[in-house]
Image (tube, rainbow, N blue to C red; front, side, top):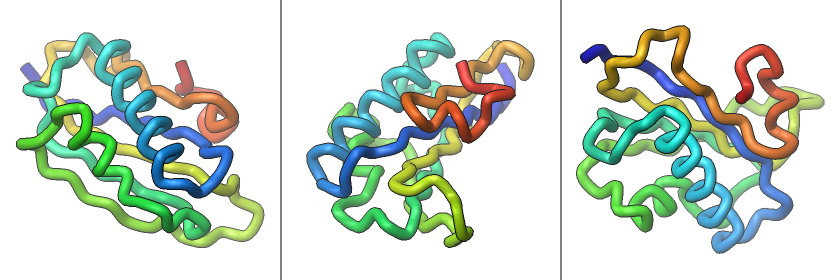
Length: 120
């Protein structure tokens, strides 16, 4: 097993707590499924949100999925002029046998434009 980092992002349609939880749950589920991971494989997850999102913490979605014994942290992205609005990003550290080249980074919806080079 090796420690690997998995990236992901989703753009929200609006800043509402329920919508954020739904979209982040979808993102986390996709990260786990596409990489053949289970919650016990997670070491930690770092979430960031753009400055225009204030309705909830993305970590709430992880807890609702049953990810309860994994360290989670939320932070705000830097406010770069012209950056895509309403984006939640994640960086998950995981234990996996997958080589770096097989890690599936997950960018959902409009967020695929953020990293066309690695978006699945």
